[in-house]
Image: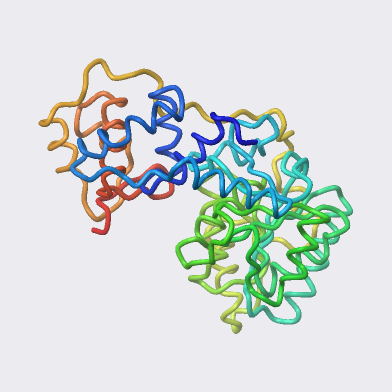
Length: 362
């Protein structure tokens, strides 16, 4: 596992300021991770920032050794068995740490999410739905949280379940689900984007949610408040072109308001597992391919200072689509992508879902 190419790729993705989109752009522009690492200091300087703190080869080798001790593996986006549905995402993680049956990533997958403080009735219904999906040959993915997530995993341990966590592969959260997390890792598939030892932080959960949505043909929300993480997962599923489904609930229960809102906005109403099976797109995930790289060709000329000033002037606190920046600036698409890459490495750009960007911290 510690060949030079994989070590370089791991160093690149662990570099501050290098997210999934930037990682792919760097590889597309420079060809190899080693060449991209060598170019990072100059790119950050051109964007008006300092050289990023690139992890050393020794640091990455220690991470690889720790993953190996845990009985886990690194799963790179260019591995042939990387989940094809997840690879479709613009923000697909370049590497995750996994334990368990990697083959589950290429099966028919449905995400099931919901409230942590779910009602007894919702927990029972989620368990019934998940069990029926498992019997129909569908793998269920969820986030190993309390409530609906827990019920979904417990019901599908014997048929196929995937757990995606916001911490390192060796950290159980919530602590009471430590045994369940271990069962998911040994009987199903456990996925973590964060490196070993990383504690779950609030900023990690939306990233975790995009993996849950990205692995699945569709996302089912069983019970959720209007501003919950479950609705974030549903939104991410919709932005990825996946099916969004919701179980209706009483308008008197705040925990059902999120689901009812999704249905009002066009989500498929779910009353049984048959409704889910009918809604998910009948495609074979193994036939899918990853999206085209953001850099199709290199720009005809290096962006000028005037180009940088022009693009920076178009950025603000409100996220804007990259396509709109290209239209308004009149610059070549590859030049715009290059300038955005420089700004991100300099810590001056924030990327958002749906291919949108804004000034960092604005």
